[in-house]
Image 1 (tube, helix red, strand yellow):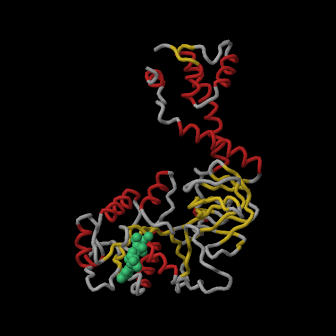
Image 2 (tube, rainbow, N blue to C red):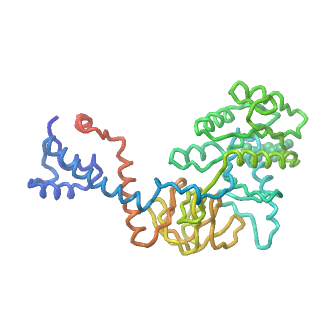
Length: 370
Ligand code: GDP
Ligand code: MG
């Protein structure tokens, strides 16, 4: 195949036919969208448009700054972000609730537990820990697939009366693939038929050697029901976090990851985000995914209005232009003009992604038409 219609080429490039016609006109060719052009001409067009993308992409690095790294001296310790995984009915939700109950600030005035997709507790040692409130490896892998690696530590919950089940093994594999350190919580230890030893042995088969077996994976016997072992689990998290030396620059324009989002009848589009660096403030102008907005209010996991949120803090954001997707990046920009530029660039990139199933290679582009 030596030729392609302008329309077909436009579709494959995810561009408008009219834009291609215009570009061809500028190159001295008068063609309509239904006419065919030869391979050389098509190649020139792709290059022409490719160059444009390149230019926007360079500008984007300045604006969105995903590639800049904060200088060492700007970094400060930040709380760990923990995800709980494990087989259905092994007690993930119960454990999340029990851990939430250990929050020493829980009794503070004005706070009522809100399920916003993540929560943060303060332990009695004044350590802060953030838990993602959406247990399960689906949420974890979905976020990872979208390039959002927000989890620092995985807690693998295994029911002591049941053992390693299919979703336990899946969770182990996902955690390993992500390179995220794991803590094993052997749950339901209050049950008479609980057998923690058997679980430690079965974990060996998956190359997880827990401390009780002289390995380096921390294991803690817990009961979400009787609250036994919760303090030990919190200590294990603190130990692991210390080893990881988690740090972020709190003193810059914020970047955050969307944990969940929805449309609220009264409040409009809402998103729970986890701040990854910088400090998100009321009034900040931002881009989230392909949408832009301005922070109208920030609510913590107890539904209280707060003025700002620093690294590892989950916060509900009001003032979005639309409902973003879980895993989307929120980036604070200096003004509305910048917000429009970034959102236009991201829209273009999103359109590009949608056509990645189309062979990027030029010969393939043609043979795909056969
Ligand atoms: P998930 O599917 O992993 O979220 O599991 P759930 O938290 O919903 O718990 C499944 C069932 O196990 C529920 O009936 C819980 O009450 C029960 N359960 C959870 N943790 C414990 C525990 O530590 N001890 C006992 N005896 N039951 C528990
Ligand atoms: Mg559950």
